[in-house]
Length: 213
Image (cartoon, rainbow, N blue to C red; front, top):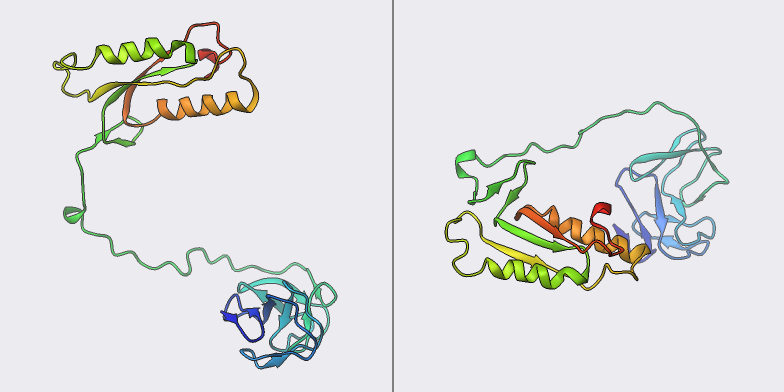
């Protein structure tokens, strides 16, 4: 809805104003609207495209944004000098433009072999996570995960693996927003539906205490 010649934007077909994309000089012709600017129009300001009589609504985005405080001519600058705000009855037409959805029949809907979690989310894997609160427990976390490689899970075909998720933060020097970020990251991993369970490993002396997460 951009008028390349007059550099204006019409936001809705039913609006009675358009918006200047650039400064418009008095007398400039707005070709797509068939009007000329009666005033200098700063960029971002509104221009009337039809007569708006006193007390009639000014419409933008097809919404009432105010009322004409005086008679407004096509081409006039529409701003606080000729627009006022007042109460009016609103038509709350919820879902007026909703298009009926033609849902795919259930027997034709795509499916996959997922794992439904208790909270309703669905996983595509079934891992056990070993997370660390501090870099100092990373080695122990990797050793735990390594223990379950090979045939260690042969009796547990429902478990895809044990994964160590480590980082190099959390010790005595961490605080503030950095600490918040690492706690949010660890929490995100712990809550991921692909983890059926998690072991959170710490040393006890770190700034990033397990109890704080």
